[in-house]
Image 1 (cartoon, one colour):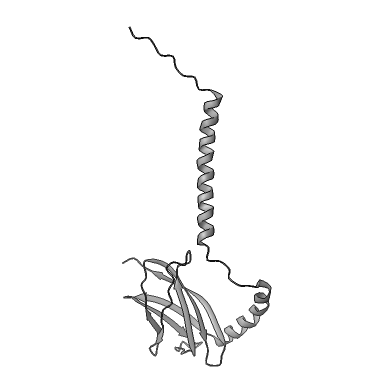
Image 2 (image 1 turned 60 degrees about the vertical axis):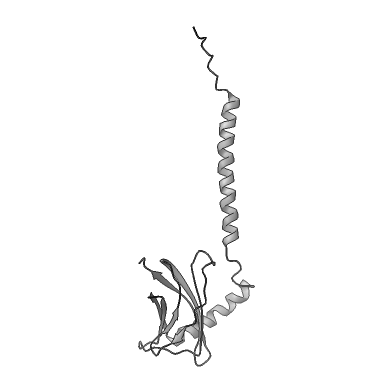
Length: 157
């Protein structure tokens, strides 16, 4: 006849180890997430926020006086950026630079070489499905700078 083994008792020490282990996992995951968030943050937007705020109203007023509207679309490996005036006519700018990228990270950022085709600015770009941002800076013929973040949604397909 086999002897019955005594059951082990769940003691305070066991409870402490279970709770300690659980909290160690939770704190470890939180630290890993925080470190990853800080590593992927693109960084400084402006060097001096006070100076930038003082110039903001003047730049906005000049930009609004142009009366431009901007619309972005993508199709067949091409990104199209339509800049129109108050009357809906296409605008050809003196200079256009743009960064095309995701809102959440900078690893997919690209600087498309937009060319004016008489109606809009077009450039080849490799885009996956999802939301993209075009951070554009255009200079009007009179020298006024026009900056805007244009949202571009690329459907799956």
